Image (cartoon, rainbow, N blue to C red; front, side):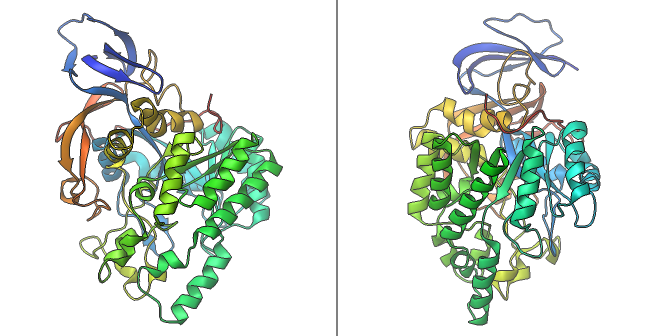
Length: 470
């Protein structure tokens, strides 16, 4: 593999901020220093005036994923290419255990689908059928396959939800073997009652998705999950936290020293339930779970990022097209044209995460660039067993590097993105800060608007113990 030298950049990690050159050789950072001298066989990139950041780590995506009668539209090839253009070089994606089958089969199926990945990928396992054999299989996944995190749902009865007993059993196995449990925390059975009542009353517009999933039910489920994890003696990770009540439960537990961690997503930080008032069916674009909340909850999330009660910003990239064509109805929000209860729950975001958070948090809210790197790269890498290979710029780390212009102003447009999805949640939004070049293990894969990567170049990441920030 050819060597790459990045000169004159301002290198920013979660703890450092300095100007130097970086030499990457055989995929690893070999030298960091001033005026590094190299021969003519080294590809040189000038980073003067740019931030040099570790590649983004997004630990919550659903690529090529089956969810009931729906299917996410991005393949691993298109989704990871989109991620790369957004400055993300590592994804941890969710694979499914199929009810009645071993989770080992679920991973085998996922591996076939992820072969087209353009960036490096790891796997979480969604557990749907918790029994004696699948609990044994969890240990095999941890020890043999480097799958050190498991997701369980407290929502979607009859599709994804498991009961509290199964949840507790899985937590104990995960926690006792160096893995972490990720929880979708909403009270599914009560939400099901509210949905059925709304539909019976003829309340079927997209906006009723939000009113039937109130924040108190996210708070209740988060509190319950924390108590079960506390009893199990296991680390816990709350995914896509959106509600103040849920954050309060996380904060209270962390104050007591319980190993509870949580993420939020850009759409919860920058959008509100007002989006559901868009005319016609347009509100369906914003149907994700949990739903968008009001400004009160949004303020709480920003506080959580400031106090480190929220450690990570991930995307929950779960892309369903708005229009039926060209990919077909199973990939489209149009499944729910007659009722919000049938709208596929999910939205895009993998390409816009870094510039949105830089603009909204650093430029407009005074967050330090170090903290920006921490919540988008370093903390997720540490929590999910990838640090220091990923999540930092240091000698011996992978040469996953982003050159970022903190001053460039541009406008988000779906037509310019690289996902197969036909919209963005942030159409027409002006932002300051843009990804200019992206390196995966030292190879330049994004050069401005030019794609220099290829499908299949992403590696599978076997991960170490999850659940601790060291």
